[in-house]
Image (tube, helix red, strand yellow):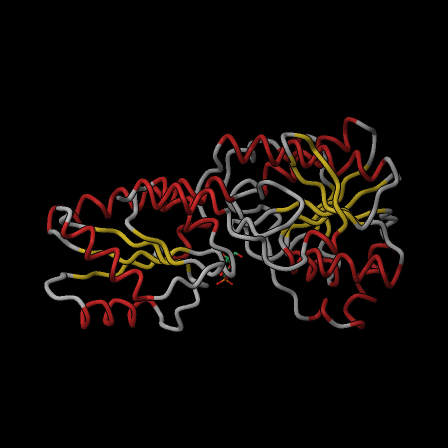
Length: 324
Ligand code: F6P
């Protein structure tokens, strides 16, 4: 392998820049050429390439977002689109591709490998933390800290007014952000996609808390939770079924995707960037590099994107105990 391309695709995540930097610097270290592809798979189709030297990635480790930009390319989902992308890779003499993103990104890479036997390695970068075969995805830790900071602020105003707040957080079909930020920010209850405890249970726990002397509460609602009601309908339902609550809704939205990456995410991204280049040099392909039990490991793309990760029952137990 002599020339490696790198791209970021799907929703951006803090720490993606640190991962690109680690890939570019590993290439320089091992005397390989590194090509940055702009706008994910769309840039692959449109030949939007640029040589990345060790110096082109200076001053990016601390920056949120992705300087290579990201996209969710519809064209790459077609055979025609992938053909164009493959031709561009060939014409530029690129031997392998590193993709940084989530399950959609890995699905695209698998197709490229399947159809053209092109070497591909994935790096998990998504705030949702919904990828198998890695304990953490790049961006998740930063997003969690952003959410906890936001809920801390909401708590100030909630407690001043004796209010109940429903706070919606991202995560798509995963409840990692909700469950962990819920514990970290001292939320009263969480609603997550991995379990459907029913709204009645939530009403019960709110009443129990009120009787025990709590005057304000925060409920963290994962955007993918399964009650069948959106967060505003949930607020209305609570208001209709429990008397005397002053309820407000706060949807945190894309603030969760921005900001400078935490040190944890920078270190994770650096390790996985180095790990991805070294995996390609060992001849690995069609795998994602991840962190398991503090070690950099490889797992087949198929495993990485398979199904929903089960709920961490221990965390749920801790939340139940600490909200008494
Ligand atoms: O996958 C990351 C994520 O932020 C999800 O948590 C969320 O559901 C989605 O992307 C939002 O996507 P978009 O930025 O396209 O609105």
